[in-house]
Length: 396
Image 1 (spheres, rainbow, N blue to C red):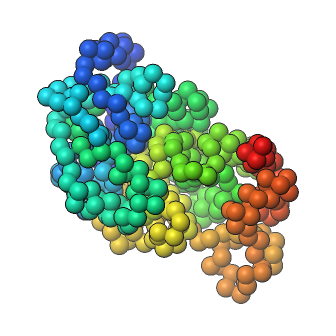
Image 2 (cartoon, rainbow, N blue to C red):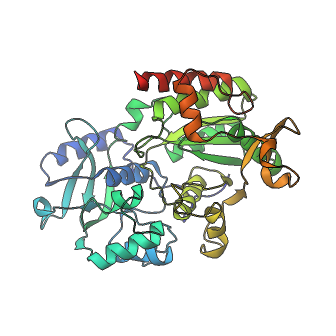
């Protein structure tokens, strides 16, 4: 199995020893407390899960600026985005050397992690602007990632952390949420050596299903990891529980046994397009995948990125040797009326627009809300039925 990024073994920051974790929870009661923002809490979950290996905690200002500008920390560790604990008000932890981090996404704001405070630094307006431009390639406040990044304050609390739980993810998605180390263990149990990962924040239709098959066949991998985001999304995106049900039904009905793992990770979507694609690759390497499928407009939103910017960044901006995982570059896939199957569009230069079965997201939503069946060339009927029930419930 492929090695983790930056170390020979994975080093998750979750405290796995029950007695030690109980002692830390007790200690936390007497520590100064900081209520985290959702993005910071998600970063803590990713650190605890081992997805952000080899980081040992939250970055300081120099590391964050280095990652934004050059994809490297001050010490030279490759990382495509800053992993920071940002706050608007740090008066409650001023002068503290050790603090309890409170979870904003769970009722009662329980302690999520304990942090040793190395520094509390403030970003200037120009530094926030620079990071925003580098990470998102835009400063447009209408971009959901830009809006979220710039809404949580300018203070950066850095230092190592000990993670005590996985927020709401383990409780709300017990069958789906998995840490990087749990996925590595499962890959080993299945006897797989090479795995290709598919990232999704949406339900999977026929094109996505066939793309996974194409990648497995072309790369000759032992298995496919369908790895869905379980954290916060922009308004209008399909909720994680609905998406999870759709994907599980598709895999159960249409894939051979022991060829696919369906799992999820606890993170808030950045919508950072190319930079997020590199982050996706890094943490798929940490969970044991040798390949990541990167398709058209991967991790994008609106028209902020070119359709294949998330592929070209790996050659244009990622230094050679930074990651061991390889990218499977995919074109737009759709059902060909001429060939009666799903193919990549680049493989059919003779096709015209009318030769494809294609539906816009708006059209799909309207059809399902009206109780109209989707074409079977576009979506499996079992998947469409789950989505129809969801959209009709929203109409009511």
